[in-house]
Every structure is written in C-alpha cells, then in structure tokens.
Image 1 (cartoon, rainbow, N blue to C red):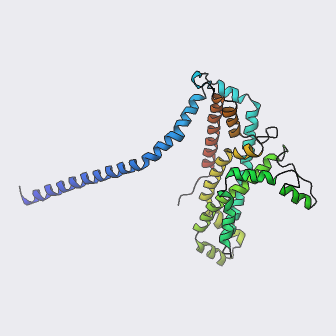
Image 2: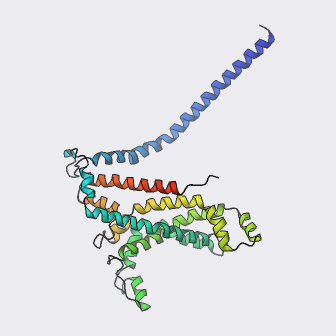
Image 3: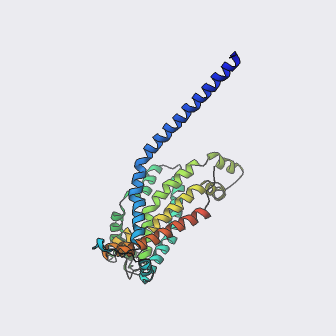
Length: 315
C-alpha cells in the first residue's frame, strides 16, 4: 500500500471515529434532556392529562359521587341534560359577559399603569410596588375585604359611606341583579391589573430609546410616539397578556362563590361555579364532567381564535 492510500485510509478512519463520537455525544445530551424533563412530564400527566381523560370518560356515565362503583355508560345523556338547563345558559352568558368586559378594561388599566410606572419619577419604585401589591394578596382575602367595602349599610360599608357623604344614594352593590356582576368586575380589575402591568412594563423597557429620540427630532408628539412606537413595540407582549387574561377570566369562581354565592337570582353564577355546584353540592359528577368538557372546548376554541387573529410578529 502506497503512502497516499495510507493517508486516505487514516482520514476515513478518523472521520468515522469523529462521527461515532459525535453521535454518542448527541445521544447522551438527548438522554440527559429526557431525564430532566421526566419529572415535569410525570406531573403534567398525573395532574393535567389524566384528570382530563377521566373527565371525558365520566361525562359519558351516570357517575354519582356517593356511589362511585355503580356508574354506567349513558352516552350523551349528561351533555343533553346540562344543555337543557336554563341555568347552564345563564352561567355561560355571565361568564362571557365577565370576560368581554374584564379583558379590555383590565388590559387597558394595566397598560396605563405600566406607562406611568415606566416614567423616570421620584418614588417610582414605591408606586410600582403599590400597583403590584394587590396581586400578591389571596383572592379569598380580597373577596372578603371587598364584600365589607360593598356593604349596603353606609354606617359599615366604606364605599356607601363615601357616596352618602357627597350626597349620592347608597348602592346595593352585591344585592342587585344589575350591579352584582359589575361590582365583581371592578374588584377583579383592581386585583389583577398589577400582574399585567409588570408584563407590559418589561415590554416597554425592551423598546429601544433611540426610536423615541429619533421621533422627537422629527417633531413627533407624545400621542404619535405612543401610536407608532409604543403600541407596535408591545404587540407580542399584548398578545400574551390578552390570551392569558381571557383564560383567567373564563375561570372565574372564587369571587362569586365568596361574595354572592352566585346570586342574586344567578346573576353572578359562572360556568365554573355551576360545574362546582353540580359536582360537589349535587354530587352529580357525570353532568359536572360533561360541563367541564364543554367548558374546556369553549376556552380552547376562544384561545385558538385569539391566537389566529392576533398573530405574533417574529423578530
């Protein structure tokens, strides 16, 4: 064998050895990745996927909570029963109304707070903390606190005491069919806007400062800078905020449960609260599972429509 063939053979051997080593390294990295994600996948399966599969199964049975061993396959009867109840449609309307009002109002308030918190002002860290502080409070505590504030008696309810003191009549905030849901909306916006504010604030601080400086040189005012620099710069952040706020709004249950018990006359009954009442108060887990499956389909459909309409811009 001449010298040239020896060198070619050595080169091929080295190439094959390098490829084998590279494949082993990739397999080790892949195996390490699978080991790291395994705990998360187990938790995802146990607490998310498995309950969903069980709910789908139970939605086709007459599963009664006090006699779980005597469930039978009943087809679509649970779905038909749930859809035939007027209270189901009332709960769905209340949920949609809450979502349609809360999402734009809460996101708008959060954006306004973020613009204010992004200013270079004295004590701005104090104001950021104050705006965010309601988020860290338990929703149960906030609900009880606002129930006291909404007390119809002006002597004990702080808001009605203020209204009466300036010459306005006292309001039946949580006792009126017309005012109860709007009162819950006001409290929910106050409690939740701080979280969206922090996301908007992070987005605002990612917008390059030189864009504003160039706009100032061109003579653009504050409103034109907001329309042509701030809003486009927050597009992807806004999509995330809108979708997450929508999903949270659909899951409304704690506020009506603690503040109104779904009343008066089901005016604050939501779909998730109706599901809870059906499953754990009436013990009808089959119908509750059917409501849960339909609720999941509605939320996923709304999220997909939002995702399709509000397409993200890739950097």
